[in-house]
Length: 158
Image (cartoon, rainbow, N blue to C red; front, side, top):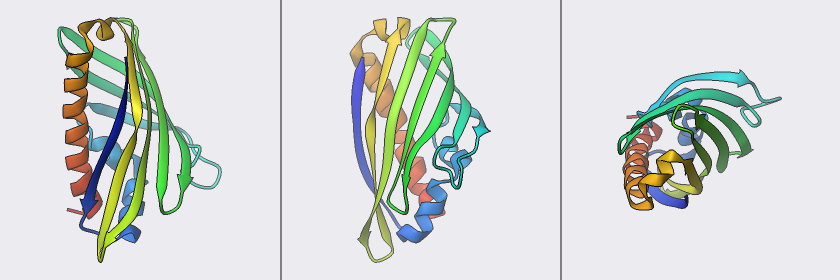
């Protein structure tokens, strides 16, 4: 089951202040409460671009307790406008996989404001996917809402 994500919100901070916060991997991971134990596997050559990380992704989806070990790669950076990630993980116990391709795009929204657009897709396969698209979409929508709310606060420095 593959789904597209396209969300947008405005942060009460200038893009020059938002950009370095967006590159703080541990802060970004903290905006999604189900993400744990983020560690850097390999740094990028000159910047965060090309860096890779390991993290644990834990959540309950219907009757399943999902725990996927994610490999996260910073797939592209265009300063100070966009950062893209690619994440892949698997829960071997319940034989399910998760794949995420996402980008955060920044643009000026007015004096001292930054528009953040989150775009991408996620795909879940295996036993968890047998629950049905409606349950997974609902759970994912709640997680994305939580992430956006926490990101808006984190990126504004509050």
